[in-house]
Image 1 (cartoon, rainbow, N blue to C red):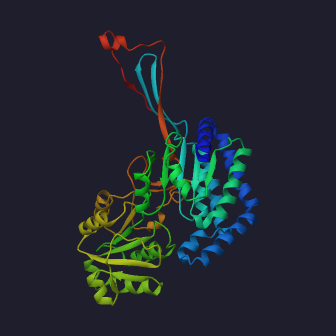
Image 2: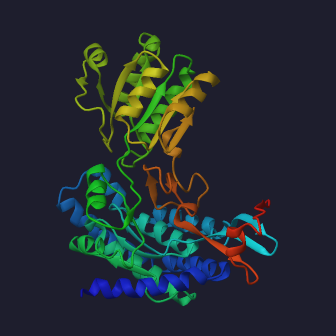
Image 3: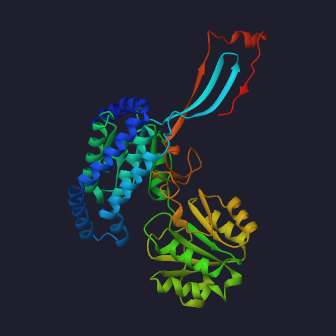
Length: 426
């Protein structure tokens, strides 16, 4: 029996206690975590400098190094996220259905934590803080496995957060950090103790997880996000939104990777659009028309996540072709349309099969914190059991509670009694 098996057993017991905690204890734990992070920031920054130095020696790409950096801005952001979580309603214990099966026989459906969650995420130390904080608020125990590039930072963060939570009344074993890649395979075998795996990474990585575990998997695949600029788009709006969607922060999954341009804009909007992107330092790839006209490299793969100052541009006939392209080449993450035509916008939102569909705004808005969820454990590109930015609601399940008074089923089977099934407003 492995050491991880024993740790998971403790986590399972901790999850039962987590499920029973009141909002006061969970909010106190979050406040403790926020305070402890600020108090330990010198230790955190020191560990992060080691990770950054090692990453630079290893030749890690600039966007990935930017993700790895954990500085004053990042710590202020995560603390702000924690404070936002404290102010949110407790997702546990909410009655979502109330039915009288018969007189004195009352059925309710009540939200409850999932239990033990395993989250595998990229080299972003701030993600560790966000995930741990969401698990506190939602009453779940958690296993965390971050990218190896952030190992020193993650060790300090996990230690600080775990201790701060326990000091506020959380159980021992509520948070567990995995540091070895080999531990992922071991964790995937722990279906007796772990209820849900949330992998954040490439589509191939998510598929690997799904194929190698009996644990339920909430897939966060790649972010091949699109922005379609319609024939009836406001040019100034389109330029502003497109530039933000691509360049505001390139190494994230909700940055736009492909721009679809209505063919009616070829001679008006398109030249200025290409110049704007290039002047901002974006390397542009195009379809056969765009590449030949502007002397650009032609796109060879439309389902491609750049995570860099690069993007693809394609001319489409109309919104129908844009929708078809997105549904075929997209990842179901986030896609946007820029248009002044409300009917076109509505059709786009209805027909595009993605977790988030946006109108006249940047794809960078598709984020748990920006949606008011406090933070997120990831963006789910699957459709069950959560979709889009997964915040508190995505980290709870539900149970049915039936309260009677010596009731038995026999009278309802022999016809001497009938169910009333009176549904009550919540």
